[in-house]
Length: 226
Picture (tube, rainbow, N blue to C red):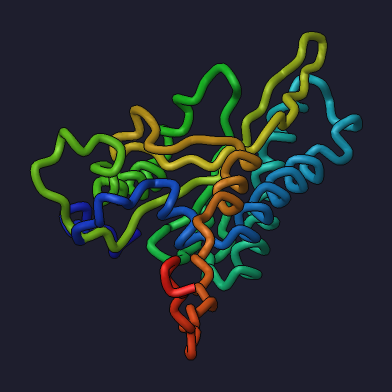
């Protein structure tokens, strides 16, 4: 994050721009789907062999393994999309870059999203979204500046069912946090995000019909000329 400067903000967006249109314009649809698959696969791989672990530290150990396995799968997804991910390195975030977006991930539970703010690196990434915040709350901003960077996260949402000590992945969201991470500029399940790509305006088809004027048209005779 050494190149991060929250004071460098981007250019005016046309009024027709929206958070959704930026996602569609800059993040390939295949990458959205691949990130979901990475989080699902990583969560499953991290839990393999959990039955052999002592109950006292089982959840803690699985949490660590899920982190490492999910980072590996997430790294693979970013690499396949030419998003230049940062190297795998312990607990550090894996961060890719595509279009204007820096892309990373985190996990939360259904009842507690505040965990997202614990990481200093995530908070730094979220500050990039000062550049696009005006798209959600335009009345709060007197002037818009050019947007050259923003951040987007794939979020694994876990829930623990009664009687099950192991939290299960229940969905994957695509989320763009507010710069202070106290709310969201965008947060939807992957299925809803993928639907944005289906609703893109279709390019209008050129009208290939050309009117042809008839020639040698004989004017009708008047009644008294017949």
